[in-house]
Every structure is written in C-alpha cells, then in structure tokens.
Amino acid sequence: MKKAFYLLVILFGCVTISNAQVTFKPGFRGGVNFSHFSKGNDSYYDDGFTSDRDFGSRTDFYLGFFGDLKLTKYYSLQPEINYSRQGSEYKYYDDSSMSNRTEDLEVSYLAVGIANKFTFNKFNVHVGPTFEFVVDQNFDTDASVDLAFFLGLGYDITPNFGVEARVKKGIIPVLDYSDGNHTNVVFSLGGFYKFDVK
Image (cartoon, rainbow, N blue to C red; front, top):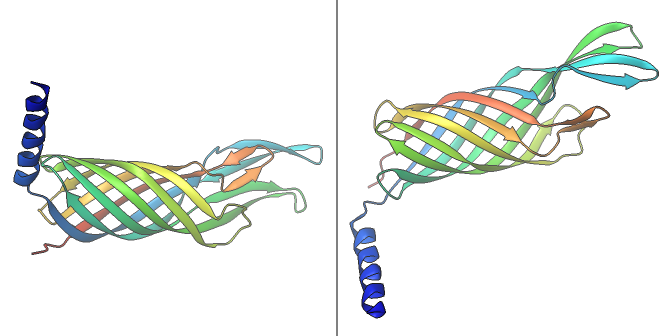
C-alpha cells in the first residue's frame, strides 16, 4: 500500500513538472536610487564636545541585467547582476572651522542577487538577498563587501516592460564610528525590460 502511494506521488510530480510551462527571459533593469546610511541625526562626543551628525539622503542610479526563470504561474526565480551607486549626504559640525559642513559620501557596488518573484496578475512581489562588492568610494571604509536584503513591488505594463520599486537594507557596516555602526539603506525606483527567447 505504501509503495503504491509513493509511486502515485512520484507519478503526479512528474506529470506536474512535464505540464508546467517553464520559460526563461533575459532582461535589463535600471532606475534611480535614494540612499542613506542608517542612524541619521546622531550625536557624538569628541574632544570634550558633543556634536551632531546627520546622514541624509543622496540620489544616484542603478543598472543591471537579470534572467527571469518562470517556474510556475505564480513563481519566478530571477538571478541578477547590478551596478548600484549609493552613499549618503553627511552633515556635521567641524570644530576646526567652527562651522557646519556637508560632504557627499559616495560608494558604488557590483552586486549579485537572487529575486524570488511571486506574481499575481500584473503585479509581483519580489524578495531576496544580494551580495555586493565595493568598486569605488570617496571615503575611508573598512568594508569591501556588503550583504543586503531587499523587498520590492513590480507592475507589468506589457508582457515585456514594467516598473518596480524596492527597499534594500545592508547588514555590514559601511562606517564604524564611536556612536555606532552605519549601514546602507536604499530605496530604488525604476523599470525593466524582458526579451522574448525562442
């Protein structure tokens, strides 16, 4: 009886896989980043003085390539390679000049990510991890990589073209100051295009 049950389960699985319309579409994505480092509006103690520092938002862009592997009607696995320019606007009080100063902290990453996409009609929700390598920065940092997680929402305007928005949070500190660790926080807004492959 057990053998017959297992055989039925295996047979059902094979039929389901054979009937599933697995498709693959490569594409590209791009848009604008609104990024900052975590823990904004911090106070820190330096040489007997308490000063304020603020990590505000800066605007830049991202570009990437992906492969949309549609495994079921509702689920796709999407590997990605992205180039992302991020950073933060850094406002602080300079004791030497006794004035408020602002610096534009820039950091760029080459990222490898995996998006798990759940599609409902023309809408999709995507979530996943991304492993990012620093390729350029204009400030000193001990971190040459970042591990981040993202959550996003997309809308298919046509079967090949759509728009998307994501929130990404890094977990490896970009800056390690006396007041705590500062990590990447990025909100992205952009579009994507998928090519038909026959």
